[in-house]
Image (spheres, helix red, strand yellow):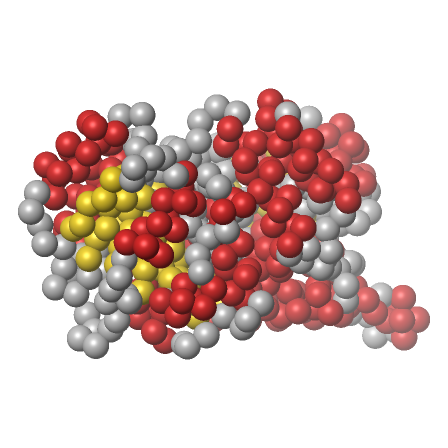
Length: 484
């Protein structure tokens, strides 16, 4: 603990969800240094306000580190936060907005304040969590169908946090745990009431201060568990999200591109593949990449591999979009994905034959921390062949620089054994970072990855329609999530 760090006022906006609030207050009592920091509980007059108030007063009693305030009327999340920070807190402290459905882990605030104090240009700091969109840890999972339990996040974070950089610059920080430099509030105010009662207000704040040269960052070594989505039930939540997303994109047309750029380039490689550093099961998950031309020989090799894979080796066949129909016919019952699934990673990626496009190379890079190459490019000494194959040869040189294993085809059983061996090797963070950044740089420099600085009229129209028709909002979010 730093003796000279700045003090913090922790503002906890209270509405309902008494069980979550009880857990949050209990965690604050255990983790906050009240000789330095204080907690302001701002009760926004929810449906059970008297019950909630009585329990708060019972929990905090006459504790000097807590202040409790009850609003005269419901202000909504945005209004409640603005009143607490701009009107009620006169300390001049930095401010941590902490949702009442969170459970801070020990040391979280010292780590977050250390990050905030490390650079004058850092305006906002967010912790990592089990449930916080881009701040979630892990963000991508080996088994996307499995629910990430708080226990899993705590274990994984504890084992890998010191492999991560201390912080990561992000387009926005998540509002569940939002530490703000006081100077930001003094210069730019807090949340825009147009986002009342909630959703999107913290993103607007981050993008607003960024236009003046200040950044939002994720404090990778601070952990705060988060239940999430307890304030807006039914159709109201999706409707608000879509309506406020439209406002954000109208104000900051580059926002969608900034998020895509962050996910593709700015995250640390250990963060990208965190779930593979400490698997939570005994299954080896494999991404089997097909070459551009799916010949009868390729089909036979895939079938041989699928047949050889036992229950604890789960193979997903990775194909180009143009190959999906043929792959489903050739490999009925197999897991098939175009380039890989969103937010899924694998233990091992296998290139089944020579890769000939940067798109294939980029997909391999995003899928797994370990590579196995089967029958990579043959470097022919004849100039006639060298000219014909020069692009594939260039990709092959990159592959060879970062491969874990390469082999000739000897059948599915042999490949499965090699995959098991490779999956058991320790991941080298430095080598993984070098690979991640090298391939990402190539993808961006060649135009394979393009991050838009504008937003389409189609997307804005879809957001407006979805906000007015919340029953179909989920379907619309799936459509616009594919880049509509």
